[in-house]
Amino acid sequence: MLFKPAVVANVAGAPKPEEAARLINSGKRRGVVVVVGICEVSYTGRAAAALGPGRRLLILKRDGTLLLHEAEKAQPKIWNPPGSFTAAYVEGGVLVVKSVRSRPFETVRVVFRQVDFASAFDVGTSELALVGTESDVVEALVRNPSIIEEGLEVVGVEVPTDVGHIDILARDRGGRYVIIEVKRDVATHDAVFQLARYVELYRRKGHEVRGVLVASDISSTALEYLKRYDLVFVKVNPRELTVSTNKNTLNSK
Amino acid sequence: MLFKPAVVANVAGAPKPEEAARLINSGKRRGVVVVVGICEVSYTGRAAAALGPGRRLLILKRDGTLLLHEAEKAQPKIWNPPGSFTAAYVEGGVLVVKSVRSRPFETVRVVFRQVDFASAFDVGTSELALVGTESDVVEALVRNPSIIEEGLEVVGVEVPTDVGHIDILARDRGGRYVIIEVKRDVATHDAVFQLARYVELYRRKGHEVRGVLVASDISSTALEYLKRYDLVFVKVNPRELTVSTNKNTLNSK
DNA sequence: TATTACATCTCGTCG
DNA sequence: CGACGAGGTGTAATA
Image (tube, rainbow over all chains, first blue to last red; front, top):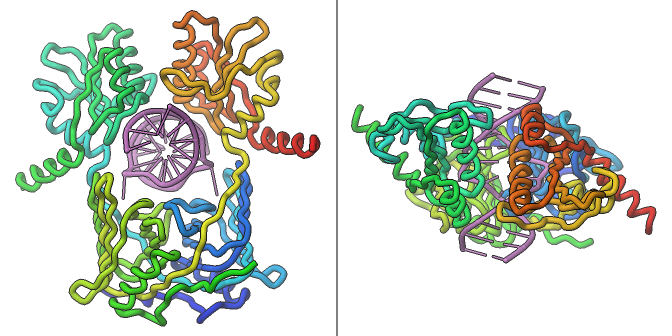
């Protein structure tokens, strides 16, 4: 596989504000721009925030994303999402990076007191094939409903109702509706109420219906409500479910 | 203000795998390590994913955070949250970065075919004072409940119930309870159901109670549910609310 | 564009 | 530590 040179644009050592601004404005279109320096940051929009002087890591992407990271936490301290417009310029002798998001209107302003490092890298994008999401769990259950209950026949997936979408709608041996709510991990009381809403709705429409909550686990309070509403919890291991699904798929090839 | 040197550790140009590994293992504790190179990445845990060869931006933080960014989107393609353990080593002549999270057990493995850049920067952390959050809106409403309704008397804030916390609990002129649910921006049907739960709970306890949803806007379907449940919507501008609150605070000083 | 619901959500807070 | 809800959530799918 052939790769283009890593560095699209670069300045050796600590760049001058003019050099950094040029680098950002030219490099932002092609790849990822990384700037490290001492800066003050302000955000104004739906909310407002400001950061005093400190050394931070600024990342600018070609889709307009701005990320300002510090030494801790996974989330950037300040950011603007994809679709924002970024411009770098020199104001009063210092580098200023301004990012504007249109809807909602929000601006981020980074004023560098000192630029320690600036470089543009030819980073690309690729597709990520993720296995083990909630929809994977749903698929596995649809393929093999006996995991939930013997004799279950799936009637529909993502069935729209007045109050949201039912993950899986099925019928049991007796022909009664079974509404199945799926959560990838620990189900909270919210999931129970959601399920209860669906069940109540179907009951009001005159159907005989039961509700089943399928998740890897359930919180203690959620379990109480579940019992109170006369619903059922089925524990599944999402990993095993999706892995075994893969195995089956492989075997059937 | 005095700042330490920006670069904690560095290697000029494209570093050798051994150099990069050393840099990561020593630099990860003190600041933020940035690595750019061509790599393959895999994630295994509750879900699983893999990325083929491509040039990416790897960020390692002193709190154990690992972020693997590509050229687009605000979110990292692959990551491990704070608290994970990172180790870099050379395997088969190439740089490998491995990150392990204990609970839930999840691993990220980055195998570099080529390292274009690696550096550790002395980035810090700072406090962010954000104005305009939901709690700011709640505070403003508590300070001036007439925004919602004349003659309202606030009884409690964040009042715990069996099914969650009531944002604001008040009494109207007639002594009836008024349960107020606050959303910073567009309220969806979830907010309505949440409010309906609280109201139902209080009603069952024998109280006379009304429900009010306060938000900057409401989705059309949410509005329907609101009417169906006989609840009331009050529109507020969170920005004006918090800004005017600030003004009042300033004036009163 | 608005709406909906998921996310390896992250993050703080409270018990 | 679990539980719970907010977040400037972001992200994709759908109508």
